[in-house]
Length: 324
Image (cartoon, rainbow, N blue to C red; front, side, top):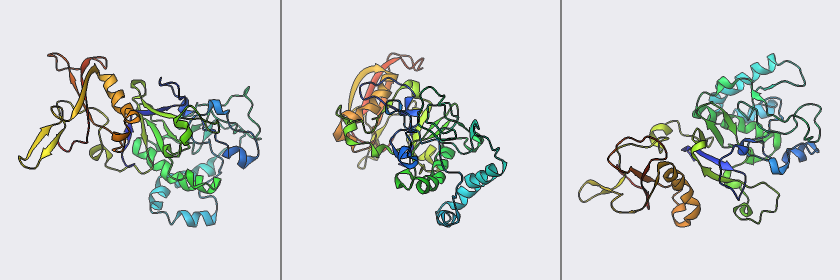
């Protein structure tokens, strides 16, 4: 979508819902093995969702590829912000087999679990170090918008190198604190249906979206993030002293949603936020609206929130409000 999903991460285990960062490991789904005719990928049980460390030497890959990319609608933007830096990197690249940087990496600041990418390429060896490499120019990506644009501009490289259109316009996760931008190797909509049950056949490792307080610095976004998302999309932080409602055409007033169309329960602020997100998995009827809105009211006379564990009344709205 064109709006980001703040705080959304993934767990690589159908049986658990505790936050961890295994989803940032390199993905393992066989395409790299088939391309190289080697068992180069990390074991399936260690698979995350991050894109392969990268194989192509440059982008555009050749003259014909360059002509195709120039037909892209945003070519000028990509050339100015991404491709020109790649050309400079290639000229200045030191010829070494164990460069600790990746000029245009998909794992942001690196240090995650990945496959064998050191030459000569070889089958996966668990005794070796498998840390992904850091981007050589992390300054290219300063915020969430830059991360989204980066994925959009690198899409033609993936598509050409792997001959797989699934690698066009890959989603990203961005860490607002560390500025780490990680391109994911799969679209959430491409998750195999049997990953929604316990009957997975093991062909791919399954993943489940979650939202936990410990993952609050991460944001999931598509490569088509709208430039004005900060003002046109649901905000990253709560709207204090604000109540959502439904506009009444007859009276011209905004009727409070909390007093009318909602379900309420007493809980902590943290649990209210997490429950609002996870409610989508349980309620198939409401799920068609893509996301829910909610209101949390602090219990007692205090108007100041001291911690995420403060108690209050959590109201989940049954339909999308249209006024405040």
